[in-house]
Image (cartoon, helix red, strand yellow):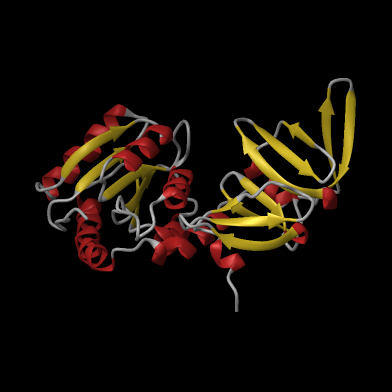
Length: 273
């Protein structure tokens, strides 16, 4: 495992506005000259790729970015992060949200992020952020594992999801000249694919144009639960959860050959008592 210095961390900055990205870097370096800004991303997609391929200690993320917003970046990173036993394991980055939007600031600060900085970023405000980061870097090096923040991120993502709407009873799916009306209770699994969702039942699989983020609040949360950023499962069809030799947790589903992966964010839902 690579040694980490809490005093000279590698940093990623992500913001879709180049001038604000430059200003953030200038403020950060003026207060903490030892930091090494190794990546400047202008989209959430780029930020995900950079964090997954580089050893990043601290990530400053704008909330609203093209490709994926800051919260989605965090979700993706945590879900795909190597296990502690993996030779490629590296401690999860510390996250700081930097945004012009004040909604969800309390949840972000208390539940997931080291800090939540509202634009325009001032030197006075950044002093507090740098102090928090220096303290957290020390404990991060000692703790080594990312699991401690998983539940916090789940709560944050739940808090910031779409507002609950009326629960749907039927899924409408167009296949050629036919429109299938599928009772929701017959759905075993929803899987996201690009801008579509694959709807799997015991008898067929169809595609609807929707996002999981928009669909989830319309489902009965006593029956349906998210198990991955790309999957929602009907708990009534879950037979068992098994761990593969490589450490991945998969679900065994009744009347389906599909074995969806349960990300580490949601594994606690299938732990024995």
